[in-house]
Amino acid sequence: MKNILLLIIFLIFLFANSLYINRVPGLMGDEADEGQNISELLTNKKPPLVGERSYIGAWIDYVRMPFVFTFGYNAFALRFVVLLFSASLFWLAYKVLTNLFGEIGGLMGLTVTAFSPIYFAEQRMAWAITLLPFFAVLTIYFYQQKKKKWSALLTGFAAGLGINTHILFLAILVGLIVAAIPFAIFKLTKSFSREYLKKVLLSIFWAAVGFWSSFGVQYANLVLYKSDQGNAEKNARFFTNRLMELPRLAPRFISGSVYIAHYTSHIFTDNFNSFILITATLLIIAGIIFSRKRIAIVLWLLGTTVYLLVLLYMIEYYALRYFVVASLSIWLLAGVGLGSIFDQYKLRKTGYSIAFILCLLLVFFNFQTILFPFLKTGGSTDNFQILGERYENASGLVDFRPLVSCIANRENVFSNNINIRNRLYFLANGDKSIKIATQKYDVQWLISYRMPNDKVGPKELCPDLRHFMVNPITDIRQEVEWPKD
Image 1: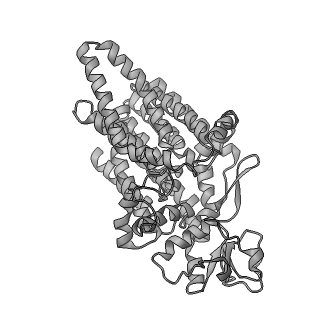
Image 2 (image 1 turned 90 degrees about the horizontal axis):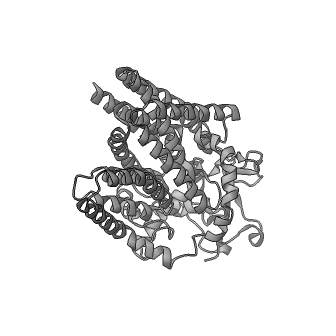
Image 3 (image 1 turned 60 degrees about the horizontal axis):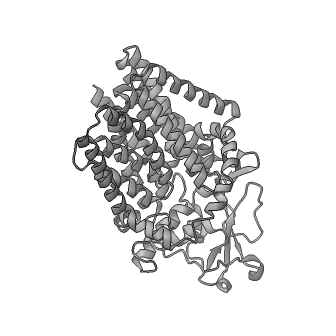
């Protein structure tokens, strides 16, 4: 019965995350920019081992290539790869979480996390940072296989490939190491002997070998290409400011409110955000009180805290994508806490049923707040508030297909907005009807976002476009901002 229920939950997970994956959300500028790296690698415009950025590895572009060859240069080709990683992550997470938190705690934690609005909103987008949860869980999975000779080597390899994928995995890795240290010290003091110490040191050696075998090339890229890495010293100076802002930001991130608003521009009320945060906190406390795996919960919480501190030190500003892993981690612990209550009172069968009901309720919630509104409107170009004067714009996820239909076979289109340009360049690899200007004085049509209060211009092409404006050039010197090489 348990296995059948797990399979049903997985199939619902697969259905929810694959539904309209080609168009919800619209192709994002950063997705397109990473996808464009495939074309640049194939045409030798870039060295073969250089990713879209110095801190993003090129290996994922080679994984994407067969799917682009099969499905073309489009959002589906890029996102199908992410869907495969998500499917693998589900089963890996089930193994890892049930090992750490017990059967019912692990299942409940997996269900709550995998069907959270955070996962549904952010983990279907095809950019490298989406893969960080997969490599975090993969690293833990290999670490748990201690009795197997290859465990340490593959643990290091998975961790190195995680940082190879995106440099922000470094913060996750520090959190994982700090969480593992107390357990390792306990085991060492309990079973101390020269043979055991030799085994530990040998494991560290093989983990280092695995780590550098997968991260070495990307480390060289980080050293050689520094121009796109930002100012690390400046970021560090504002660490305290970001840390002080965290308590006010946490409710909006942990509730999933900002991730939903990324699609719709509508954010939850502060009371609802606080309610979700308080509920999650109480469930985590319940897990620490009731669970027989409370040490694992405390260590996971410790690792999440350390990860968050390192992350705040590394980043330049608050952005939605940076806090996905931390937010998912809180949902996971809340789910484990809920499962521990059923475990404590020997209500495991009830717990399985509740996990299934939660799965359905969260799918319904995600469809009602994200999927159906987006299908109806194609997204929004409005702003939504992150904190105080800090706003995010939802325009990055709007449906891009109506614009492509509008400009089909129009000569010399261009946009001053880099995110619009990135999408055009990527799609143009497979769609010859997209004719992008190759130099400034060739531009005939200029594309921009249509903001909520913008009116239709007298000479505007496709005035019925909801989220974009396509206007003829009247004075190219004033209107076109040609990018510098």
